Image (cartoon, rainbow, N blue to C red; front, top):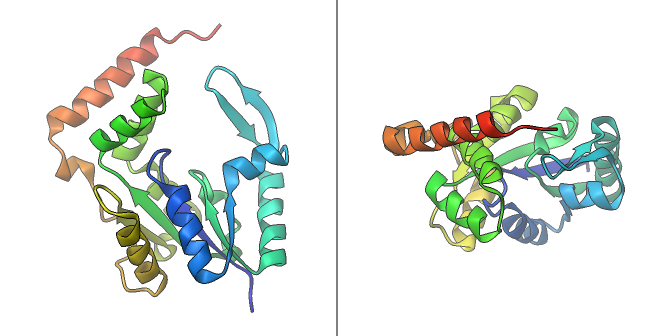
Length: 201
């Protein structure tokens, strides 16, 4: 059996970890939260206190994913930068999407700073996770699933359908079509204003 990695990606707050654990259980695969794994095994260059994030060592992370795939044969990887997975290992990249207003509520509950919340909302609006996945792995490996107001069971069912090639590939969710321009512009302008006033010393 060849080594394969199923990547479940999306912005923070979309619910990747919860569903990825269940998918791994169903498939009898190894579940890995990549961000936790990177921190635990110190696969980062430094911690950037300005953005409250670790700067990962991409080469070492790729090596680690390859080693995990070799050891466990089938891995379900949860990460907002899952596109880093080596091309030859990727079976499918599932991008979980979420309504920007629902995402705002979830990230507020986490107590995140306003600028960090807005950066992730704008990333969701602009389909950054989908674009990154397609850029690295091609459209044929990428499936989007709208997780807004869906039960975990429904999302898992759709992921299993995607793995059986029963869902359309590529970009399907466009918040510019689904949300009013007024709401989108509000987020974009607020982030722009905050970034203007955000001075790094």
